[in-house]
Structures are given as C-alpha cells and as structure tokens.
Image (tube, rainbow, N blue to C red; front, side, top):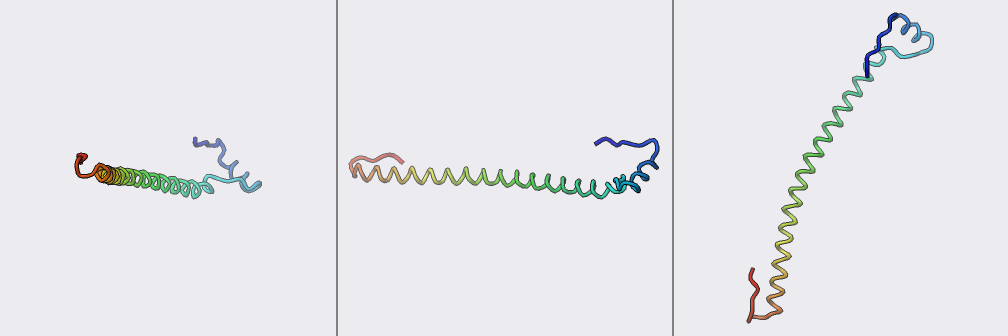
Length: 90
C-alpha cells in the first residue's frame, strides 16, 4: 500500500474533526494488528507443512508394512492351498 502524503497535513485533521475520517495515527494500531495476524498465519502454514511431511513419511512406512504383511498372508494361504508338496518362495 503506497504512502500518500498530503501537501496540507492540516486537511486530514480538519476532515477527521468534521466527518470522522481516519488519520494515519488512527490506522497505526490496525496496521500493526494486521501484520501480527499475517505473521501468525504464516507460522501456522509452516507448521502445517512440517506436519504434512511427517504424516506423509509415516503413511509411506505404514503402508509398506501393511503391504508386506498382506503379501506374507497371501503367500501362506497359497502354500496352504498347494499343500506340502510345492511351496511358494517367501
């Protein structure tokens, strides 16, 4: 947001008195608060990004373990169906 400066700063004060318009001093706390909100949102976004990466890593490991267990179960079932004469390699 560009900083607009009046040639006659007294004009802003007069307008504020007559019509209740805001002055730069009125806007300073609001701008400060908005900046803090922006920083907070940025921190939350970074935290969510880190948590997402952790969960992706966990899901990858967990799915691999589950897949290995499923393959092992299917191999055992296949070997039971074939009987003791033939065995599927593990």
